[in-house]
Image 1 (cartoon, rainbow, N blue to C red):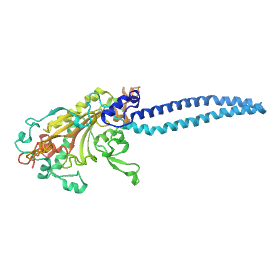
Image 2: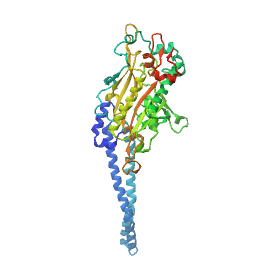
Image 3: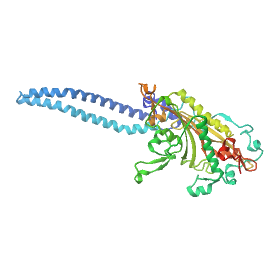
Image 4: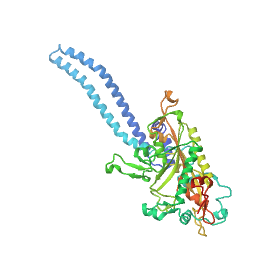
Length: 469
């Protein structure tokens, strides 16, 4: 959620930000409704002050007039009683007028809240302008020694590559047919060493973040209340991608939603809390099962492990002080952790600076990390794919957008601080998502005989095995 005060002061910034992100929201109407709401509030405050004044003044006045009434008769008594009645009616009339103003103001609140939740966080000024992922800008590449994605896999390794579909079939690492039988399209069953490798990469990623980089491992719910999805910025935009459990229709008190990332649970942990500034930054890592409907993705990456409804993801979240320089520094560090991890797995990758149109509603900046997958890309004349990069990670900088929605604050100066509380900043980044990461892992480390070489860092998690197959 954006700062409504900042919107009042500079609506043009938010109008331009929404346009740059391709988000349709009537900010002019929001500004108008907010102005009307504040006008009604000012009128109500004036009436309330008048109420308080009358409460002090009317009683003594009426008492004085009633004293005079005792000695009056005839028309004088009638006139004096009318004056007493008029004074006595003033607080009642003010109360009714005040209630009417407050009722009109309250009627505006739902519309203001609805529009406010739709206003995106404006992109940072250094984010390139673009309309979609096609306009993202490559900023870095890394390749393991002896491998060049500009060449064919065969030129690099001396043999034609198998796709991950071929490899998981031949090595019996995954059963797609039975997965579809159980749960429908985009489903799978990892089997044997496929399941062991899936668990190994997650365990390695958790240990990597916890033991090497000091992140605190957390378990978080993946079935959450609607306010948690709203608070983390996944609703209202993105609502169509979430699985909805309608408990309210069968006697439950509220509906629930399956999360598409561990970020939701990690950020929800400190909802409505005032954090100790001395404890910041908070660095959390979780592994959770994630669910995505993939609505609107029909016909895209329907085969294999790339675009699926259920997967497991190791996610990192940082909650820090409200300082742009600190947020930017953490963004670089979090990307650096992932680069280090991918390099340890020997996977070629590139960093993409996302353009304004690909940031989504909640991000001021986002860097995507794509791993090289030999089995992707156009199929050549020899029937072998040319290879292509595919997204495996996404690192986001959100400033106070989520924390404002979640009412997550800290008081500068710690417990002794006397100033107002401040909304925290938050960042998140994928550490590793599996089984998607298995695609480059299997394809890059395949051998001419059809076996897979297991990277050294994963072997302790695979019982010491060096190869699969």
